[in-house]
Length: 200
Image 1 (tube, rainbow, N blue to C red):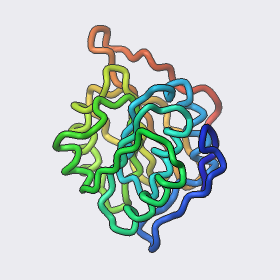
Image 2 (cartoon, helix red, strand yellow):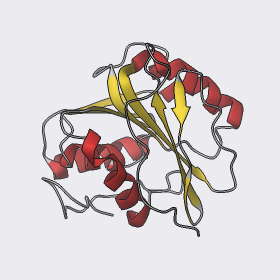
Image 3 (tube, rainbow, N blue to C red):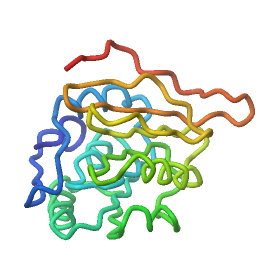
Image 4 (cartoon, helix red, strand yellow):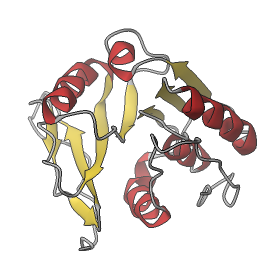
């Protein structure tokens, strides 16, 4: 596992011990950040269920101004702390808390331009829908939210404030994206990523 591109490109990251965290495959991460690259410079990024912190730190390496990582697992927190030191870039905030509690309160770095969510399998559809609704209050006007789920899982139930684009499937993983609506027009200013979907 590594940082793929940017200021810290090529640096090796560690994964948490145990099987509670499933790191995002490099090919999925590359596809995700290729589509998001225009939005990254200067962005404030929130990485929920951060695991190793790889997604948030990739965003930081590629030009994000600030990244907030939220994680509660001890092994994951230990891995994140190691990876923050390895990447050695300013602008990282680690929130050691349950994601639902963190989103229900004040989050450092808000409002966020980009939110990355890779929830555990134990988080059911209703729990994810509740989390997404609570997240809206932490979003910037033109924010993007990306949820990584198993390809057999249902698409997220997005709140009315977020307009989903076409999901992208990469084998056993599917990326679901939604952009915040422009309250004045009911539309979004962020275009849907270009490129063909990869079928697993």
